[in-house]
Amino acid sequence: MLTDGALRMLVLLHFHTLGFSPVQLAYLFVLYEIAGIITNLSAGWIAARFGLTSTLYAGLTLQVAALLALAQLDPGWSITLSVAYVMLVQGLSGVAKDLAKMSSKSAVKLLAPRGEGALFRWVALLTGSKNAVKGLGFLLGAALLALTGFHAAVLGMAGVLALILVAVLIGMPTGLPAGRKDAKFREVFSNNRNINWLSFARVFLFGARDVWFVVGIPVYFHAVLSDGSGAGNRNAFFIIGGFMAVWIILYGAVQVSAPRLLRAASRGEAAMAESARHWATALIAIPALLAVLTLAAGAPAPWLTAALIAGLLLFGAVFAVNSALHSYLILAFSEDSRVTMDVGFYYMANAAGRLLGTVLSGVSYQLGGVALCLATAALMIALSAFGASKLRPTHP
Image 1 (cartoon, rainbow, N blue to C red):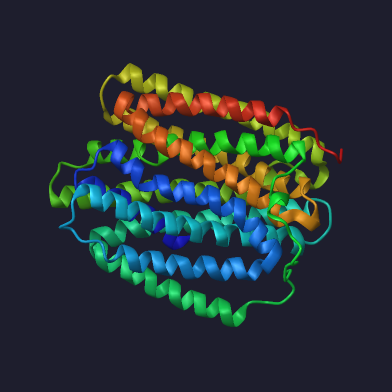
Image 2 (cartoon, rainbow, N blue to C red):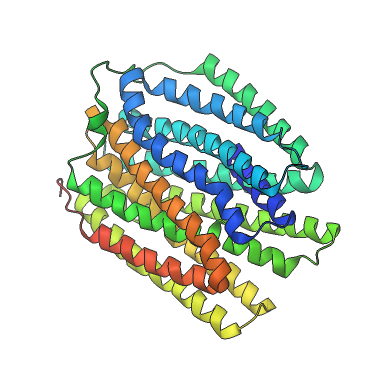
């Protein structure tokens, strides 16, 4: 997660300073998200057939390979070749990240203690800490780009991750499923209506985040904060990376506290499903209000930048509760015998939402700036709330 967040920020800021347009920047991440869709759809079956540890090891190995490949990028290449190459490397990185994430999340369902609220607490702890580490990665990526440059930063991360892979190979505990040879790929597609509607809600929840998060806000902040000089770019990198890091870390911290906030220990599955609809509905107002403020301002202004920062941090906190509820419900709705496939299908929907948001982020910013990015986010959250309203839990 640390290198995944750092790599995203490195690529975004490095290529923005090279003059890439918002749509070209979005293209850099398209294959990353497409790879996530394919990987999550197949990773659940791979884990069910060959075991959870196999997908975890494969994810870490592929991330090292992706970082080493990115270090071979030649500044003399044309923009077309550079975009194509980085898209391929980012796609490999997307495969790596989703293999590791699916393995970790599925293991929680199997290893968490059985008891009131225990599953939600462990899911929230894993997901929250994962996102906090990814948030540090955003800051790390921006800092490394400013201090060491693109090439050295990528090689350094590859070396550290290789050491982590060795440590995991040595210290992996026993007890995770070894897989079953009769697992069929078609089993990935669930017949459970709750899992299907939850996956629908997940598509639009994460699309609503990435429609402003991937391109819109970083490019807007760079335009506002940098004067175009080398020193100005470095200062903007630190501020943008810092904001993105704080956003993700806040998001992770709220996820960890979500079980206590929602009183999960004393509430059943039905109450949690109902909460998913309420929290999604509450989230709609934040990007809608920010879009109106941006349109009213007409042009960048200090007060608008401050309002966007405050509003998007609030968005992150409410978004985190929504995400934590989804992460709990997918495990609550899944059966132990097919948890890896249900989780894989759910994270396929997650990746589809990120892909949709990534594409719309570049297009929306180019057509209507930050205001259109935020208005699109509000519409997508409304669709997520509709999906959540269709959940019918089986355990009241």
